[in-house]
Structure formats: C-alpha cells, structure tokens
Length: 194
Image 1 (cartoon, rainbow, N blue to C red):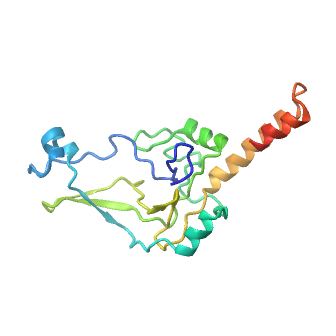
Image 2: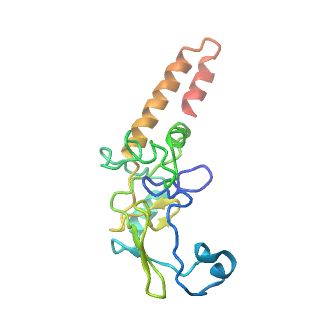
Image 3: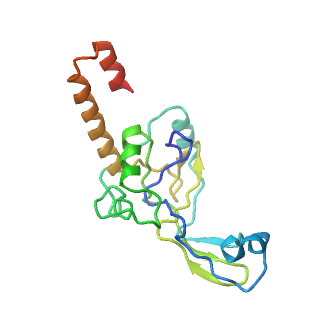
C-alpha cells in the first residue's frame, strides 16, 4: 500500500505473521499446493469478507496520483498498532511488526495506513464446504498506486499513531541537528529536509 521504500505498503492491523492461521486437512487432494506441501500449501481457500467493497473512487485516485497528500486520521483508533497494549507493541508473533518496526517506519517516513473502514477477511472457505475463522488482522483492501482503499471506495487515512510518532521523531532530529556545532547551516537544512 504505498508507503514503504520497498514499494510495499504498511497497514495498521494488516500484518499477519507466519503461522497465524493453520490450514486444516480437508481430506482432499484439491491442488498442487496440497500435493507438494500438504494442507498448509492449499491454494483453494477463498476469503469471506466482513464488508462489501466499492471500487476505489476515481477522483480520489487521480488526486492522490497528482500529489495531493493523503489525510491523516484525527486520533488513534481503539486498536491502533501504536497503542502500548497493541499486539505489535507487544511483539505478538501472529502479527507482522513489533516495536522496532513501528519506530523504524516512523523514523524513515514510510507511510502507515489506518485500517478503519477497510474490508477484512473474517473466514476462509474451501470448495469442500469447510470454513475456518481468519486472523483478526486479515485486512484485504484494494490498492491503487500504493494507497489502500476503504470499503466505501475512499482512500485510507494515515494512521494517527504513526503520524504522532513521526512528528516526535522529526522534532528530535531537528533539535539534535540544531545543537550540532560540526554542521554548517546548509548541512543542518539538508538533514532536517531529509
């Protein structure tokens, strides 16, 4: 979703760590994934979403592509990854991300999107009829030019927790740079601008 320097997006609540969902044995040899890797390799499971997805708003897509900055959520949501009690802040292995990751993306300026209003996979359904619950962080929005879109078709907002941490990091960098006697005024401007 567009924020990381690698071209991947970061979405609050969307990181699902390895082993978060264990796919059960359906009793079928339904695909090559099962043949090669057993039940964990099955590629036949279809997502069941909690919300119907509207197509991304074409006007919003065009405005963001033209450089309009995305909106930031007014305040942290109830399960923001930047809250002290979040699974990410507590290094829950079933979620992607941990305190060091959250600090790094705030420092580097990699956008982190709020999951509020996004479509989420709530169950997985196999052609055999078997269904299992999905991970609570299995958000599944459409992504256009690195920006995730909420179920109503509007672009996601930047995470308020990330934005607050980013401001704090930039303030600290500016203060440290201003106090560095070894830098010229021009170098200080470059550091703050980066």
